[in-house]
Image (tube, rainbow over all chains, first blue to last red):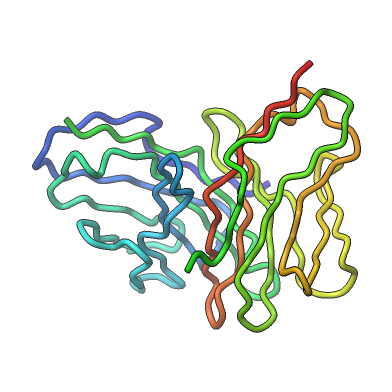
Length: 114
Length: 113
């Protein structure tokens, strides 16, 4: 089975801190995604990557950046955390080709910014 | 305009009754459509997908979905609901020219014993 792990289940940070959320997948997937999930808004795509050192903006990239130095790891960075970034963050991965749309999700990181 | 709409925030159904969770989508070419489920405090799990072919798609845990092109709908169904089906369900649509998905806002399903 594909396994996507995220570094923390719960995280509490202060406003202005730099925050790193880590995601690792063990199935050699090319594609990786970062979403945030908010009640009533569903999942919104922040950034995605189709290859190492490649990144593309999603629908809500403002206030975030990403890093993909290795194929299995995709990091989401909040340069200066703000209270409106309090949310559930979900990482996902998928393989290329026919099953590329079948995304596998990690358990999520619930981030609280105070 | 919302690309994927789930018109019901919450659906309540009695255990053993059939359930339907609704999803409609905006038309753009020939989209691929998906259903995901999220159990409490867990990530999303893939349930089923429609790519092409038979309009009735079968997936995990006894769920199925019916693709209706004329109504631009992809409703999730199950003949007999279980209490363990209680979860948050998301409909998703592929975006043309990329591997991205657009998700609906989710529908909370509660199956009452």
